[in-house]
Image (tube, rainbow over all chains, first blue to last red; front, top):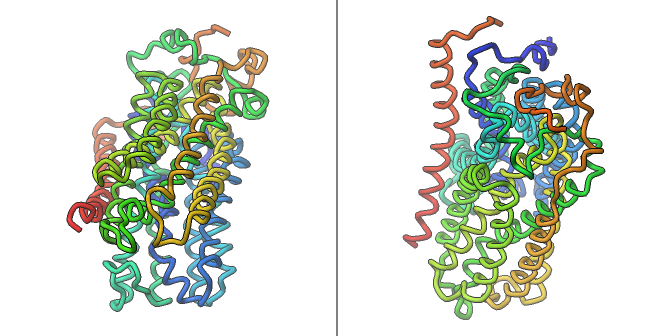
Length: 473
Length: 42
């Protein structure tokens, strides 16, 4: 039955609209983006299992580690089997993760939650994240940044959907739960039904993606698209590089460093956003920014994180991938410096600087698939993207570690001021500087790494976009 | 699978697909804006 999901059975018939592909990708990313909304029910899980913050926090960490691992390991499988099967498998793992997790909550077996949401859900996350990327790039050879920006924007939007939805569902299943009170704790029964509802609901929405996604025919190209214009750009290849060969190139590892630095810097602020704004405007023991206002700041950052993914990635189609990373990292350095030196002078200035910084963070995520396509071609771009996402996992550890280590050295939470953040922020400027240099060093991939003309790069590993090739190899 | 897609059927499919993801995203954006507004009102 699964063969119906194979790549060869999902080639689009003539006249199929490519604008059906972005909503298919969004259907997947909006669902798996829920992973960033786990804090909503964290307190309830702690109370239900009578466990520590760390024991429950590990669930999220397992899911993120599994995301990186499964994206790296399954990338080639996703390329070979096509987006429809990958999306279906992702939906099965993601939904199964919630259902097994609900069983763990119902039976008070924390390890089942680790296995369910952490391991199974994490595999669904990794496969789901990369599943639509290479297909979008092939459908939008003229605007790959816009296409991947749309999809990866969904991942940012997923948390914005899941947070209020989870609160409202918990309140529905447990009338004693107050969705407007962050400290409110829901019953175990409400948590079970929340997980069951999310699992089934997400499965249905992801099936929209499975149903709509198609790969373009080998000879398809968008109306009015001139492949020779692609070949004319020096940083955009018309050749193809396999995932295995990509790992042997200097450019891949330079991009790994670029993504790692961009994400490390952004996560440093994101992870600390709520206490940070309160500390910057603290006078003695009290802050001019209330807890509720700090929550509003976190919400605003989510919006800019999401918008940056679409806006900046689309902009990269116009100004080029390397220049846009010069902006993310170079202007980012200036903004971090301004934040460290003048952020405490006015709330509006602090918020403005932080929002632009976070929009660059989101933009960095969304633009990287198009950058990979420019350098390595379309042949196995999804698999290469999967391997590059290990930089995200590493940054997810490094960013919070750097910030927390500096803050721990400065004093206790609730007593910190703007000055306490300066060492961490200036370190982030240094991290961005490393990424800035790495980006400048990125060069086109040498010809010896290219797939031979008429060989695998034109074949079944991924649907070729023959029209994109101009025979310049 | 038919060799050629029906134009009317595809238009409906486009509308439904964008409506589903647009509704989800719109719900998230509106809810987040309500939360973000607290930055300016508290």
